[in-house]
Image (cartoon, rainbow, N blue to C red):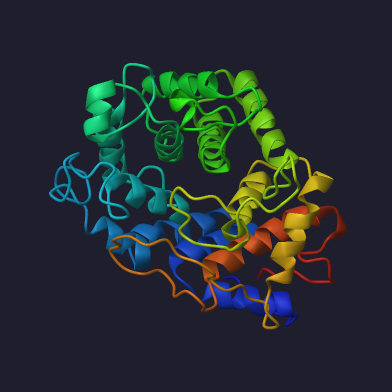
Length: 340
């Protein structure tokens, strides 16, 4: 049994997280409490049985897809945000166990229906015409297939395609076939997330995959996650507003969550972004849902302008990673909840 005994601001916040959906609860136990492996496994299983995860799984069609009758691609990528791709991204973020049969069925549909001649992933009419992958979609789907440990050698083909699509500046851009010469932070974060999970799942070509991630992180670091590398100006104010789910969009919290998940070096060029995360915390220790992307949804996870368990969970684990050697979550003295 996990109990929270101290009542610092951070501990009260963790207690609030533990009162949330199983998708939040098991990750808070793993990342912030340090619960035992057996307790984590039991809690993670609840993602498929109750709450957000169970609600999404209940909407899957018998063919293994979501929204299959609502689009020309059979619901594989559209409509946003209720397609199979975006639903599976959510289930990935929820931490639905890798062995879930419904997820495995969806993985097979995404792979069979999306793999193109060049080794990338894409869907819809444009993909049928060009037979060419789209880099953002490729990164997202590779992350899904890898998280759910889909056993298929074609994942190596997809990963190799992503490596080939990396640009000279270290990042990725889905508009490269149309003449883009500078990488996109949106495409780059999707590629990085996909490669990280692929490395954990397959391990093939690990040296090349790690090196590619290092170059991709350096691209983001040169921009301090949100500034122009030429002028120093903020690239887009939305990058400093935290949304969940992020869908295909980039923001600095999503980027920092990747850095902590990869246990990347804590480079000083991240400090300004870290300060923005710290400064966004409310007096009660929580973070708000600052933004949401328009589109069809099955249901809302949280309300814009209200305290967000997703943003709070991600911010706390980022700050814990950033101050790990200091034994602090947010630069102030804090005690992790006790285990009993």
